[in-house]
Image (cartoon, rainbow, N blue to C red; front, top):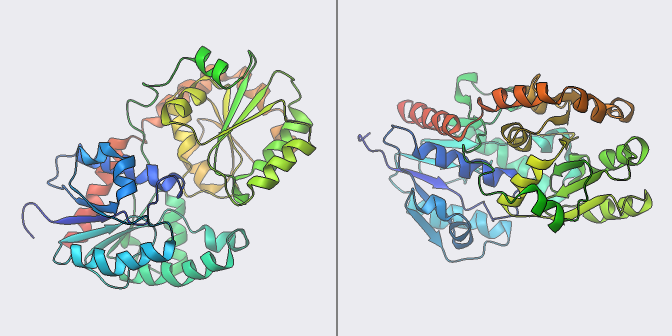
Length: 373
C-alpha cells in the first residue's frame, strides 16, 4: 500500500432527504475525517443531487458524480454494480456507507451498518424492502473486511446475528460539529415564524415511521401534558405512517398544540432544539439516536425511551424512561426540577460524540481494513 492510499466512498445509496439520519451521520463523519492527520483523502462517488446538497464535502474531497436521479433503489443498486465497480477498480479500499455493498468491486472494503431494525421489527418494513435487506445484508457482511457500526448495541447485534469475528466489527460513533447551532435564528424569530407562542416547547425530530413512537408521544401529550400553552414541534419528513399521525392529532384534539413544519433547514432545526424545554425521543428502535446528542450539545435536556442504543448514548445525562405513558406523565416536571443538572451533564456527555472523534474512529477502521487485506 502506498503512503497515500486510494480510497473510494460509495455514497450512491444516499438520495438526499430520503434516507434519514444516516445521511447526516456519514457527512459529519467524513468532515471529521478531513481534520485527521492520517493521509486519507477519499474520493466520494455519489449522485449529482448529493453533491449539490453537500458542497461542504466538495470543499474537502474530490467528488465523482453520476448524472442520474437515483430515484429508484433498483437503479442505485445497478450503478453500484456497474459504474461504481469500474470507477473504483484498483482502489486500496472502498467504503460502502449505506448498510449493503455490491456483489462485485474492489476489496478490502469497509461496510457501515447503521442498524438491524429489519430483524427486530420486520413488520414495520414493506415486504419488498424486507426481502431485499434479508438478502443483501448477510451477503454484504460476508464480503466486508471491516464492519463499522455506530454503537456497542449495534456491534453486539451484528456479531450475534451473523456470527462474525468480533475484531472485524468496530464502533464508529456519530459526532456533531463544534459549530452546531451557530447559524440558528433567534428564539424570538423562531417562536414567531413557527407560531409557538410564549409557553414551553418540546421538539421531536423524526421521520414518521412506525417505530419512532409518534403515537405514544401524542397519547402522552393528550393524557398527561395538558398545559394549553405547551407546544410539541414534530420535525422531519413524511414516513410510512404520516397520514395516521395527522389523523391521530385531530382525533386527540391536539391540532392547536402540535406544530408540524416537516423537514426544516439545519439552522432552524438547531434553533428549535435549543429553545425547547426538552427534546423528546420515544423511539422503539434506534441504531444510535443522533438528535439526542444534538440536543445535549445545544444545552437542551433529553427525554428518551430506554431502547438500548439510546440508553447507551444518553447514559445518565438525560431521562431514559420505559415506554409507559404513566412513567412519562411526570417527565416534564422532572426536567423542570433538575434542568441545570441535566444541561450540564448533557454538555459533558456530548463531548464524547464530536465529528472529530467520529472521523478519528473512521480513520482507524480504514487503517485496520487495509492492514488486514
